[in-house]
Image: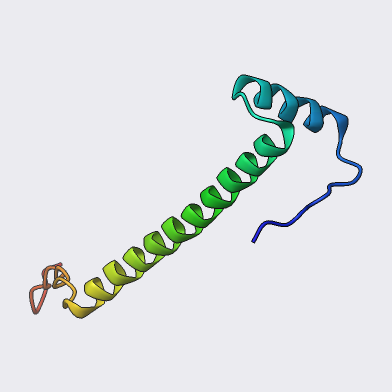
Length: 85
């Protein structure tokens, strides 16, 4: 369903920039504003999902590391009994 959205008190510079983009893309100002909103929302959603995938991959990697036993620690050289002096 399509609905109307009115933006009040839009900064003039933003309105002018949207107008320029609209002219370059052969769209009305309204069509350009809708396109810009769609692009911004898609980018936001993709970024969230990418961040989530990255976080899940990091957690999975961490879980895999904790399942494998840690490598043995190198032992300090043992001192000889009755040491010299």
